[in-house]
Image (cartoon, rainbow, N blue to C red; front, side):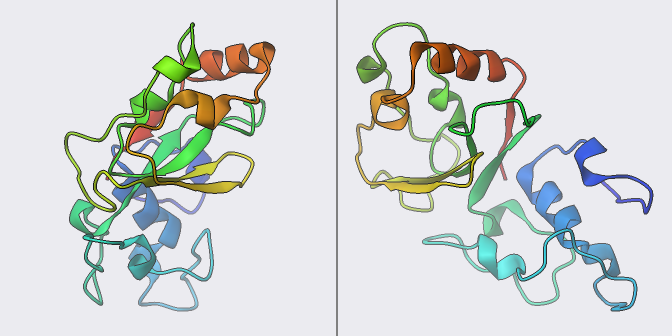
Length: 170
């Protein structure tokens, strides 16, 4: 998980989203400001907390799963449709976001068996590849609500993309 100066984060492999966010923040160099170069400015580990997910203690070197409310998709490419969920709250099973053949109204988003926080069974948050953020509150949300206005051709592109996408839980 160590970031090297000559390695692009896109070329790295991560076991979980907490490791990804740790490298994204460049925590290894945080204490040496001239060297510190986070990939994204303006955030710290407190941004990963949420309802029932405690804030990471000040000075933590690594973001821990218990302090990370987010699951993130790996292997996303520019060619994939913008509607694909790339960041989701950890309280849902991200594999249930994959549209299968058939009626999307019958395909439900499932809760995570591992994580109940944040939000429990009251809802979840997703950020799509195109940047759109959505909050859902239904306990029985179906994929038609997520992908309903998508053409059949784009639905097939989404299904194809999910053959390479892997969701990294905290």
